[in-house]
Length: 181
Image (cartoon, rainbow, N blue to C red; front, top):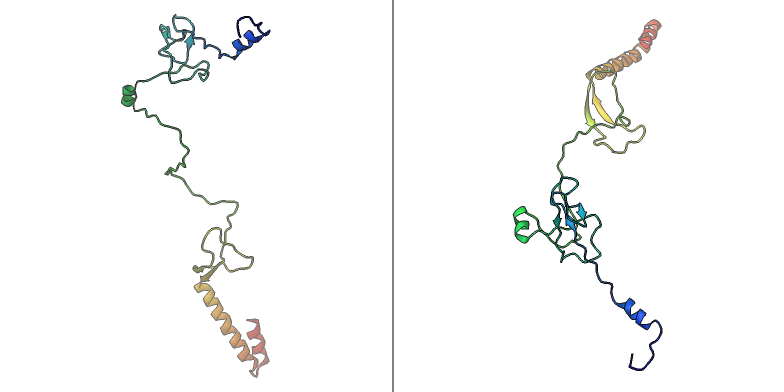
């Protein structure tokens, strides 16, 4: 505005609004034992009774990002090294970690079926080799060897041959008995 010119109404007010607001600097105090507790004035901590310590200005934390009810604590680089704290940038990476754990594998009892044999023997060949293999209705699951079944089969075949031989004999009663036996 030049000397002698009338100022526009509200011009001074508008220039005052454009300047950034000044940050209010309040003295904060915190408890060394409970860093989350802060107060605006010195005194004893209500939790443990220790004297509150003035908080130092945080250079690394920009104004407006402080979390209400929390206090930022700075640790010197020497102390960080002593306690093993490492700082770094946040990076997005794929994490892989092998976890070894003990467990117990059990059958799903709802899917379990028992096959019982009415005779003695053992399985010679198993057609279904793994859990989850598809099985069709009527398909063979295994082949079995049974000495009892083999003996019964031989006796049946001998009886059939004997019945056929008796049919051709002269006595009709012997043929009828051979077929019944």
